[in-house]
Image (cartoon, rainbow, N blue to C red; front, side, top):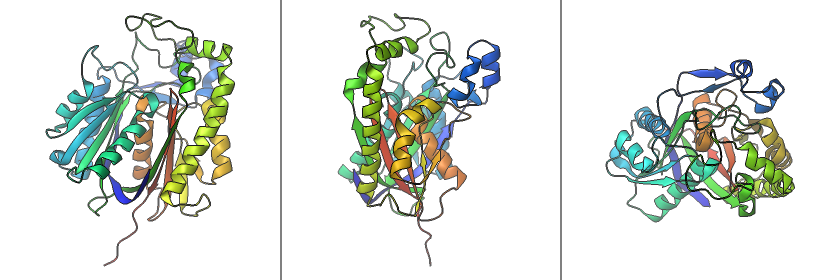
Length: 348
């Protein structure tokens, strides 16, 4: 998707609970095997003891609006994403988030796209803004809480551990009115033939938590490996990551060797995921600094993409005119890459 000089990020926020569980505590409690300490790539995880995913998203949304002094009535659309239980079994969490953030004029919709949810939400937000001149701005939120008894954040998956948190972003038109980052392009690619990565050999069930309580992601992944799926995922993953990375640069009109490219932020996954499908391509295509921003959060479900943008903006790592890429992926499998630029200094 070529965006030219049309759109910018107006506000971005990550809201994390104050409570933490450390790697040392997880090992001492028998929830993480000592030999996996380095493989998960984190020192601690944020843990919500009382707030559900939509509540975390709503806090991030309010924080985003407040940080930018952005009027909630200017938001015409809300996209809310998640990967795990939203606190109720049969309801519309996106509408809750819109209500709690005060988005009285926004159309809320839920987007269930696993860990690629925020990225796809941003892409759909861009499409709506480009297609509808009456749309002023769009908010994209995510929120997940990986709490027992349904999920074990430390032992439920291979080499990926899960933190609780909410994220929010406001995308609007580039007009100099509080532009934090200019969004230059977006690229997405999918490999639906890998959809059984999280399904394995499991039969379809009639209700949640039928196969196991807590959810055991390792079981279907093990079956996927036994069926020879990992070689397929690796081959396709490397090809798709290369595709979205190169496409996003091409759509932005930026050469891979452009000295303005400062960094590329990776999803908040374990080191084995980086080695499997991200770093081999990134190191071959561009020479930008890879950012591993999840050492104190772990995987934030759908929220990694926006959380990485929050950290890029908050750190001030980009000088005016410099460029950052954000790349991510989600089960299904889908990968996304986007190119952002810090606004140039204005003179006058």
